[in-house]
Length: 115
Image (cartoon, rainbow, N blue to C red; front, side, top):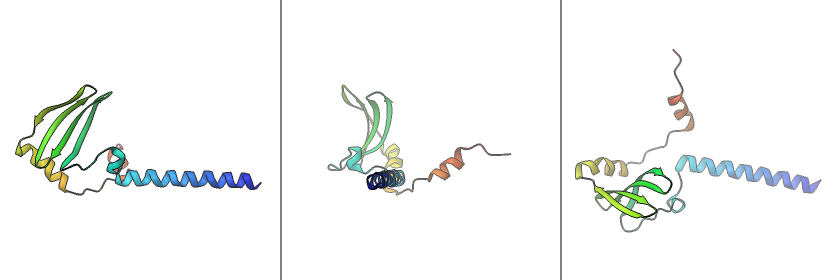
Protein backbone atom coordinates (compact mmCIF):
# COMPACT_ATOMS: atom_id res chain seq x y z
CA UNK A 1 0.00 0.00 0.00
CA UNK A 2 2.80 2.42 0.90
CA UNK A 3 4.73 1.67 -2.29
CA UNK A 4 1.63 2.45 -4.38
CA UNK A 5 1.12 5.70 -2.48
CA UNK A 6 4.81 6.59 -2.95
CA UNK A 7 4.58 5.95 -6.69
CA UNK A 8 1.43 8.08 -6.92
CA UNK A 9 3.10 10.97 -5.09
CA UNK A 10 6.17 10.66 -7.33
CA UNK A 11 4.06 10.78 -10.50
CA UNK A 12 2.18 13.83 -9.19
CA UNK A 13 5.44 15.61 -8.38
CA UNK A 14 6.80 14.88 -11.86
CA UNK A 15 3.61 16.22 -13.46
CA UNK A 16 3.71 19.38 -11.33
CA UNK A 17 7.38 19.93 -12.17
CA UNK A 18 6.70 19.43 -15.90
CA UNK A 19 3.81 21.93 -15.70
CA UNK A 20 5.99 24.47 -13.92
CA UNK A 21 8.89 24.11 -16.39
CA UNK A 22 6.66 24.44 -19.48
CA UNK A 23 4.93 27.47 -17.98
CA UNK A 24 8.31 29.04 -17.17
CA UNK A 25 9.60 28.45 -20.71
CA UNK A 26 6.33 29.69 -22.22
CA UNK A 27 6.52 32.98 -20.32
CA UNK A 28 10.22 33.73 -20.53
CA UNK A 29 11.53 31.57 -23.37
CA UNK A 30 14.53 29.35 -23.15
CA UNK A 31 17.56 30.84 -21.42
CA UNK A 32 20.57 31.52 -23.64
CA UNK A 33 22.58 28.58 -22.34
CA UNK A 34 19.74 26.19 -23.30
CA UNK A 35 19.49 27.61 -26.84
CA UNK A 36 23.24 27.37 -27.35
CA UNK A 37 23.53 31.15 -27.49
CA UNK A 38 26.52 32.64 -25.76
CA UNK A 39 27.35 36.27 -25.34
CA UNK A 40 30.80 36.32 -26.88
CA UNK A 41 32.25 39.77 -27.32
CA UNK A 42 29.23 41.61 -28.73
CA UNK A 43 27.96 38.84 -31.03
CA UNK A 44 24.25 38.22 -30.59
CA UNK A 45 21.70 36.17 -32.52
CA UNK A 46 18.69 38.43 -33.11
CA UNK A 47 16.50 36.35 -35.44
CA UNK A 48 16.41 32.91 -37.09
CA UNK A 49 14.31 31.31 -39.80
CA UNK A 50 14.48 27.60 -40.51
CA UNK A 51 14.52 26.82 -44.24
CA UNK A 52 14.73 23.06 -44.03
CA UNK A 53 16.69 20.29 -42.43
CA UNK A 54 19.93 21.82 -41.23
CA UNK A 55 19.46 25.08 -43.15
CA UNK A 56 18.46 28.46 -41.81
CA UNK A 57 18.80 32.20 -42.14
CA UNK A 58 20.27 33.96 -39.13
CA UNK A 59 20.46 37.68 -38.39
CA UNK A 60 23.31 38.45 -36.01
CA UNK A 61 24.43 41.63 -34.37
CA UNK A 62 28.16 42.23 -34.09
CA UNK A 63 28.58 45.39 -32.06
CA UNK A 64 26.70 47.95 -34.24
CA UNK A 65 26.68 45.87 -37.44
CA UNK A 66 23.90 43.50 -38.51
CA UNK A 67 24.77 40.56 -40.75
CA UNK A 68 22.41 38.15 -42.51
CA UNK A 69 23.98 34.70 -42.54
CA UNK A 70 23.08 31.53 -44.38
CA UNK A 71 23.76 28.48 -42.21
CA UNK A 72 23.86 24.94 -43.56
CA UNK A 73 25.68 21.69 -42.94
CA UNK A 74 28.36 22.83 -45.38
CA UNK A 75 29.19 26.02 -43.52
CA UNK A 76 28.19 29.60 -42.80
CA UNK A 77 27.96 32.25 -45.53
CA UNK A 78 27.55 36.00 -45.08
CA UNK A 79 24.67 36.85 -47.40
CA UNK A 80 24.59 40.59 -46.79
CA UNK A 81 25.35 43.29 -44.28
CA UNK A 82 22.36 45.47 -43.46
CA UNK A 83 22.69 49.21 -44.05
CA UNK A 84 22.41 51.60 -41.12
CA UNK A 85 18.75 52.30 -42.00
CA UNK A 86 17.86 48.61 -42.29
CA UNK A 87 19.74 47.74 -39.12
CA UNK A 88 18.15 50.59 -37.14
CA UNK A 89 14.79 48.84 -36.76
CA UNK A 90 16.48 45.63 -35.54
CA UNK A 91 18.79 47.48 -33.16
CA UNK A 92 15.81 49.41 -31.76
CA UNK A 93 13.83 46.17 -31.23
CA UNK A 94 16.87 44.60 -29.61
CA UNK A 95 16.91 47.24 -26.87
CA UNK A 96 13.21 46.93 -26.10
CA UNK A 97 11.93 44.47 -23.56
CA UNK A 98 8.65 43.11 -24.82
CA UNK A 99 6.26 40.92 -22.93
CA UNK A 100 5.22 37.78 -24.75
CA UNK A 101 1.45 37.53 -25.25
CA UNK A 102 -0.39 35.01 -23.13
CA UNK A 103 -1.96 31.92 -24.65
CA UNK A 104 -5.41 33.44 -24.15
CA UNK A 105 -4.44 36.61 -26.05
CA UNK A 106 -3.06 34.61 -28.98
CA UNK A 107 -6.16 32.43 -29.01
CA UNK A 108 -8.49 35.46 -29.01
CA UNK A 109 -6.54 37.06 -31.86
CA UNK A 110 -6.68 33.95 -34.04
CA UNK A 111 -10.22 32.71 -33.47
CA UNK A 112 -12.79 33.87 -36.01
CA UNK A 113 -14.96 36.67 -34.73
CA UNK A 114 -18.71 36.14 -34.45
CA UNK A 115 -20.77 38.61 -36.46
